[in-house]
Figure 1 (cartoon, rainbow, N blue to C red):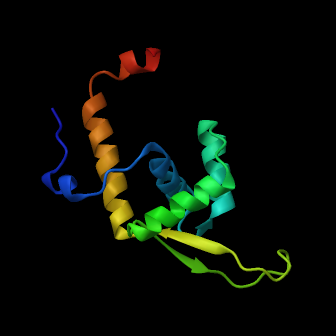
Figure 2: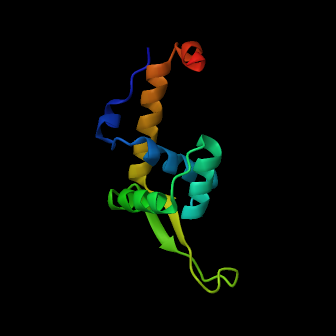
Length: 117
């Protein structure tokens, strides 16, 4: 039987949407922007969160030191406007790893039953 690591108890606990945001960042690569994160979540989960929900979640996670942001260079395509890009910080990596290990430990051996639900 697997158990989560003792160090995981010190990692933040993520809500479902926070997990989706961090997983989208992993899939898209660091430097992704809000609209791409939203699109990735919608395409993979069917959940159509508003742009405001995505940016509020990113802002909250930035305050918790799970993600960091930077402003990109202006783009002619965007009419000279800049995009805000996001990167997973160490706290976000720890939290996502903890969530993954916890779900993996709890579902070990019952995958067939879960797939029927």
